[in-house]
Image (cartoon, rainbow, N blue to C red; front, side, top):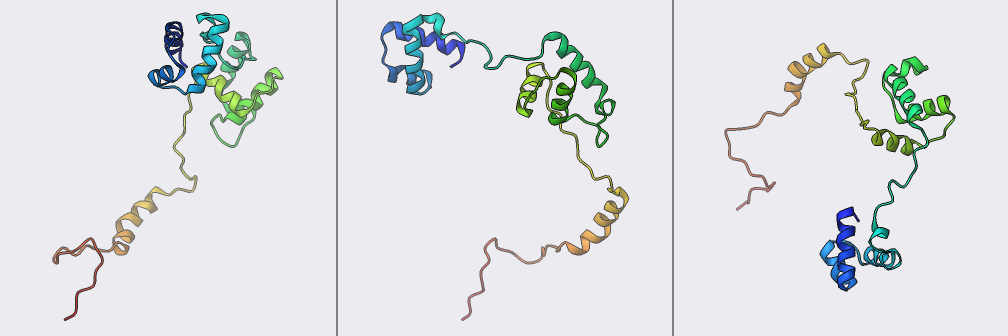
Length: 165
């Protein structure tokens, strides 16, 4: 439940509304309302407030600043030769090397998102790509392969046989 919904749930609990009414009104499950009702009964509206993120960040601000500076230097500066982009796996390895802290790939993704980094997917092109050969193929070969439409006769979307008398 989001913060506004939690506070509204507390008000509804205080008014004595049923679990089903609250769940329907807030568009949440009955189970969620029951869980929040128990928390409200034991600790009041304060017990419904968010406790923050589920995981605690293991990199202090200073280490994060160092990591960010190293990420800006790029993968080749850290011995990653086979590509000029960062992957989550590479960042995970870099964190392990620099700070001796273990993260999972998903944990690295959450860490980056938490600090405002986003996923940038590069346009993938084969190294062997030959633009001139592609243009020749489009201009000369494809028209020979592609079946020309017959515009002189009416057509039907359904494939049917002509009826024989």
